[in-house]
Length: 188
View: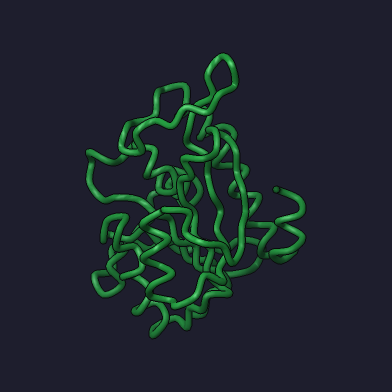
């Protein structure tokens, strides 16, 4: 099956990481794609298909842990013709407050080890990224960077469910319908 978009959500496998800031992409993917995930040992990932806007989309949650996220790409390149242009990586960004979403293209890794792994395998940084803010603003609006392996509070999870996940869904739909430039202009 040929997919129009490959949505690679970065995170860590295991119950101890399930609700952590580093796993915000997985939390969002579970809200968008539901619970219909299939483990593919060759891809080293859990996969879920979704037909959005008439285009086939593949959601991907690597089982390799964050620092080796790129290990899922060789199988997807070979079996599904994944290219950098069809790849959208969704991940946490500790330099943005919770609720902030930024779409970027052809940028450096920003110190994110999952992105470093992907760039290393692709030998390119020319792919889209949906960066999800996971940090906190204090009462003086100063950004406080929590431990990315710390869990979200109940209120933060509610914000992800009601605000962030639906917005990411709209970004994905816009990417399919309008392309990257219009989507970046609308949501950044």
